[in-house]
Amino acid sequence: MYAVIESGGKQYRVEPGDVIDVEITPVTGKKVRKVDFDRVLVVSDDKKTKIGSPVVKGAKVTGVLVDEVRGPKIKVFKMKRRKGYRRTQGHRQNLLRVKIDNIKS
Image (cartoon, rainbow, N blue to C red):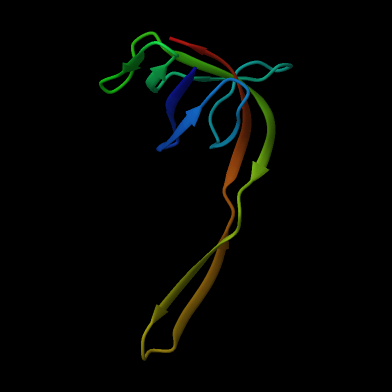
């Protein structure tokens, strides 16, 4: 069974047991921090596939927060030709590492 979810403007194909890095979202709970994904675009098992328009009604993907990590460093370089203007800046995105537990269709 797999699902395609949308989080932070990006789409992820997930199965139970997968570990994915998503952008920071509000999480629930204090001791066990659960993450719920309500925007499920596709749910598929061995026999049939449900495709939403745009989301599948009643479908939900749940996961557990594993860690808070930072993404790879991206260099941002600005330049105006023939003017001597150059600016270099770096950026690292804060991410949540989530382990997918359950897909409910």
